[in-house]
Amino acid sequence: MQEGKMVSLNEKLENEKQKLHRLANEALKKGIPLTQDEKFMAQNHKVDELVVKIQIKKSIKNPQEQ
Image (cartoon, rainbow, N blue to C red; front, top):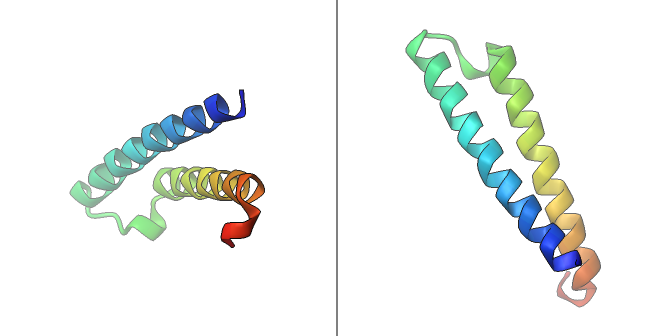
């Protein structure tokens, strides 16, 4: 079951990264710096949180690899 959860977290990360890239392209087309685009920054935060969750799960699963 834990492996399935990891797969879904990885899938969710990929989906959220795709959204992030889409928002980045939209902001750049409008000439808005990414750090000033609220939608982009919020999505970037979501991606960061997912990366941290995945890293925590990996470290719990394989603590000897740290």
